[in-house]
Length: 322
Image (cartoon, rainbow, N blue to C red; front, side):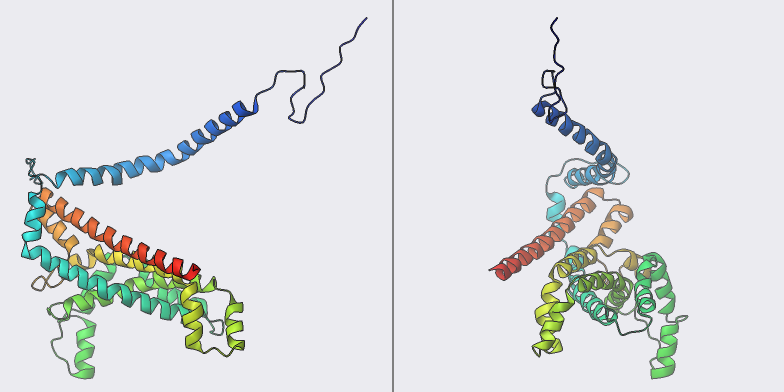
């Protein structure tokens, strides 16, 4: 009587004499399963982005080539909206105001946020958490609420700011938001007050990522505070600077809420920006085609600024590596 030896298990867990799953086939099955799981998790976000981002973006692009109005469909007009836009003196006024706002706001908020971040990153200040919270608090407040509050504070008849300027310095009838020469600067200052806390927290996180040993070694070598800032802090914060500057510029191009609430583009259109003009053309004048063209011009402006910033940062990184 002959006996058949039982198949011995192999290292792969399958009997040597049995029929196992081929490794290639197993890997393909695992890959397909992982893809299904990934798509399942990503699909809700893709649906939301498609409905609220991709479709409106594509629809706005096609609308910019039509004469559509808010209450009726128009006809295809080609590049007429873009031609009218660049020939309009109103557009160039809005472009100038937007550019002035961006050029002043972005550097100012970065400088203030960095200065306060370096101050509040020190370990020898008691109650440092309380001061950080106080600085961050304006960012938590709704921009609409903050704009309404500042409108009352700056009101020539009811505001505390004109009242105390009159009592302390004898400046009467102060109207910062109603004066063409001060309205835009006032809105910039309020926006800096509103947002610097967010960028300050980003800078604090960046500062805490720089090794303390670098500063200790620099102190032993006799480096001054300015030399430490220039050769350690600034290079160490380069990725943080990239983030803050790009988002600061993008945010400045999209300024709308505070202008809508506080000045409505006045006085004499001195605070009217491109985004506010888009709102006026779309919902005030009902010109959806023209407003869509304005939107895409603003998008191109934002992309140009972002690309310039990224190329500049890439160039600096290559120079440092070289």
